Image (cartoon, rainbow, N blue to C red; front, top):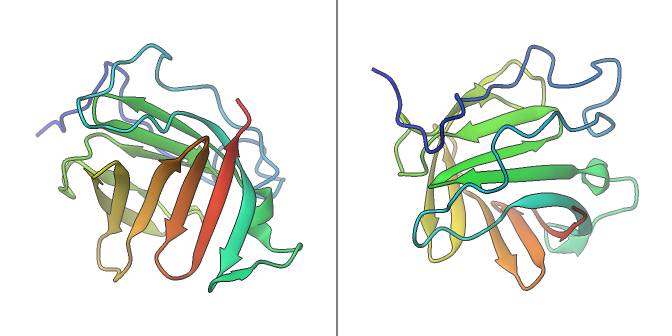
Length: 166
């Protein structure tokens, strides 16, 4: 059965070894070309998270992260259409075909940690927050806007504030 996908672009996946120059670290790679067009319409109630974002503030366990923490180098692009979300960053392309709360229509890709461990994630929009729930893991990953910034909360592990750079 074919999964429903918002927009006409086919579902995108992380290539073997991650996108870009695989001789570079995952945060040193250039982002690949956009997958969706810039003029895609969002469904009612879907917050606009689109843009290229760079970490500007990073808290780990509620404390400012040290300057050498790897996430300071994190840059991501968020693309959206309807209720579809694609998060590209750290070497992975995470395409949520439909953020309808089901694993079937959610993310089917790999983890950024090694570009090979399978990952399935269901996602929803709850009160302006993109909530991602990885299958078999007791965590939620959230993204939302606060003013001009994007907030990225990874369960209790870290909270990052990102500034739009494009």
